[in-house]
Amino acid sequence: MPLASLLALALLAAPVCGPGGDPVLPLRVSAESPRYLAIDGQPRVLVGASADAACHFLPTEDVPLRDMCNAGGKAPNDYRTLLPALRAAGLGKIRLWVALGQAGDAVNQPFAREGKVWRLDRKNQDYFDRLRAVVETAHELGLVVEVTFFAPFIGGDFDGGPWSWGANKAVAPDPFPDGPLTVNLAIEAAAPCTLASLAVTLYDLQGTKLVNADTISIGRSLRLQPGEHEITLRISELHLQPGVYLMGFWLAGPLGAVHDYVLSGFEIEVVAHQAQGLGRAPGDDGLVTCRLELLDAE
Picture 1 (cartoon, one colour):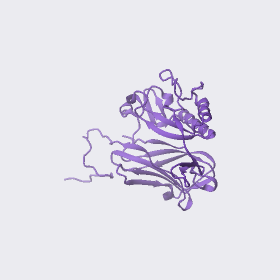
Picture 2: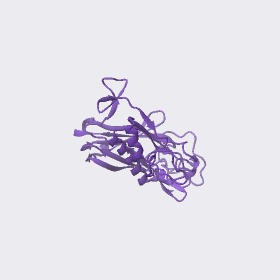
Picture 3: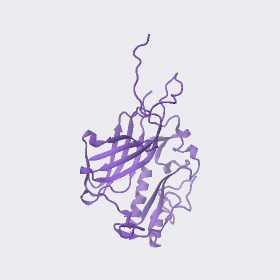
Picture 4: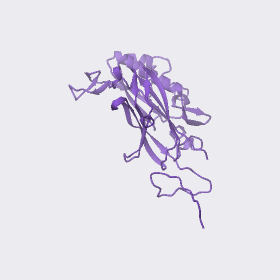
């Protein structure tokens, strides 16, 4: 049975490098007034609104989004009309729901759809283009965006969506115990910078680091110019037992200058490698897999 791979779509929305290659930290606890947040060094009280849906969603016949922020192009709920209105009313923050559990409209899911199944190894590029456009519009207006990455049980039929194991059980690619694992990263640089270390990390649910796949170990560094970059990493062999793991990312410059990091980006599930004629996997397997051959028996 051929090994399958998982395409992990990770979007680092904030710029990772500032002028001179320094880390960009636009939002932090105020040094002068630690009870408040500071934006670009200035304390600010954030008062805002939740859109209750994602402003990058397109209205469809099944989900018209008549009373929710959307990207349908019709006032007053189109984000290009609604966000300036919120800013004019004195609000400084919005909450953006990136993905919901609803299944009825493929245009509003981050994965591509083929027939009746979701391709977890192929992204819906138009979806991400709309998502980035909403964030960029908010940035131009001076609105802070609070991101909720995933609300699995909001929006409709969870069992028919890409997040349901049952919906894609027969066809969706899964990472098997021996790999490979493919990771696609979208990175935005605000200024020229060097990535001496670009790492993918895997932890178990108890917080033990199991994998630190770092470009520094293969002597590869990346020089990023201002703008958007797509980077693909591939781990050809990944010896993990079936189970759930936490994937994170680490970006650092020369001499350990940290540009950005996500300790726990999302969970991945490694599934058992089924073989015809064998029963269920042993219940007492160890954490790390190995290759075993039976050379002789008398």
